[in-house]
Length: 345
Ligand SMILES: Cc1ncc(COP(=O)(O)O)c(C=O)c1O
Picture (cartoon, rainbow, N blue to C red):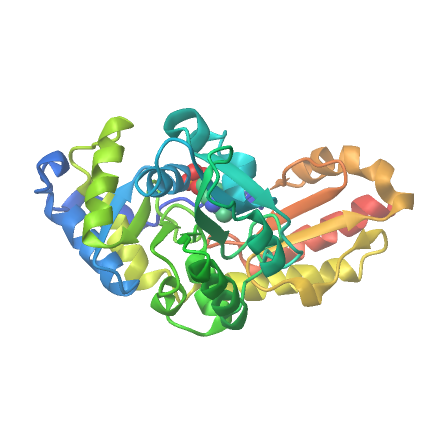
């Protein structure tokens, strides 16, 4: 039986078509900006997100870091959600490398923010304080269980941020999951922001890479920061070729991952010992808890599932499973039957 890897959508392997595209891609030297495949991907991404220009970078973390460094100076501050990936999982990189601090305000359980908290977080012009320069949002929101900030909410928060003269960055690692869920074009979501990053290497199945989009001038500055970080890459077409294919063929199919996630959530809600509200599952991330009486099972859950060829990340009390291209409905059924058995024994 094949491995059912539910840890993340980052575990997806490139498809045969992607590997073929890599072998046939036209290559150049991207530091000279003459890799035709990289250029084609960047033009396509910019067009898709309605921005002037785009840049391929090594990872989502690098995309967020470069986007922030290119728009802030040492001593500036970026407001982020306290559950955001930028704040929790990017090693404080903006502070280490750019001297730009992060100021967290509470995320609600949809990944959104309260505009009063936003207003209070913006510092006055006072030399005792950092200069609040930017607000960074995340959509879909990973720690909020793949939740989507809807357009009304986005409009509200971003217009308030503009009133406060803040720049706006979107960590759109899973931007296409958000656009599929909302039934809007990705450029609609991107239109609220100065800079957006999205990942090729998550649900879109590519082996490596993320994209930053924004104005021509901003992307030029990003190119400089990418070089400073040692990621001025050469024959980037080998990364870009699957990226082009992904944008053409992998976006619409994310809806299937959302259906499988919902199927998993509904199945889990019928298993004694599992706490989950399927109504909360909007995209491809499913978070669930074990009830108190079953909490002793949390230690053995991962190893018992492994015996059935299923991998999930260990957790003390809040488990996350993620659906993706390499997870079928049958795999979901196998997971549900397995977890039900483990909790029953
Ligand atoms: C919301 C979000 N932003 C950024 C990243 C970082 O992406 P990468 O792992 O490519 O650095 C992730 C990765 O899981 C993520 O979930």
